[in-house]
Length: 380
Image (cartoon, rainbow, N blue to C red; front, side):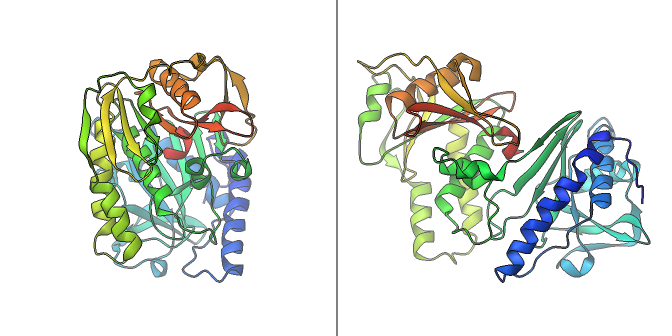
């Protein structure tokens, strides 16, 4: 196995990432968690990143590879495909087989023998806190791990794009003004209580970003109609009675979380609502996940001032919150969402840009200001 990578960023972050994974697995072990993954050492992590980065820059029949690489042995997986002969862990070999394993949820399995990493097969199941490297865009790799409960999106650890390195700041979630959707994305604690309601918000965010048309989703309190004062009237696409497909599914799971194929049904309901955000205007749901309207125009609430500043944050290390003009966070969608949250402080707004940027707007009672949380690096 190579000890020196040709992608310099790989060497810079390898030891830090090893320490993060080691800490996660050690904490989970002390708490009695089972089915825990083996932790790759810094040299192995460096090779993963180096090979992954150069693979991302290659093409097979005019298409760039979109694959997920997981560090695990055959004994740590069930129902896997095992190759009769090992596939070399090289950009050339990975690019060649990438077309067959690019679907979401499939991982190419990588292990070590005689100081060399090799690909031994593919699987849909991996152990808790398994080291995963995703290749989804040219010149970019994302390092992540599997959440202990196995539900929802994997937790991102680091994003490397060219010479830019972003390592997720786990301590950001301790900020008293950090909304739950953001803290849950960076919360790796295995003893934390699973909150399916927050996981649903994450799935909505991922689905909104996936359609690549941009969009705004407003979540408003179910016990108030004040949100209507911040929407242009008459409403163009109000839903009456409210659509409760996602809400009903959430209630069913609260009663019986063993419902067969519940997560499959959930994904379909999430995509229905997220798909509406591709339509010009805001999609509105309440905190019970009932669809209220879509394609609506946000307006300044009567008697409320125009928003002049907000606090922009990004939950990565060495990034400090900054006070900026709302126009600095994005275009018209971002500005109107920021105004909506200032006028409706009990609401939150999820805004996706066509270029992949994703921002969560929330009201901070601590800072008495709107906060714009950049989370696109966590949704990759």
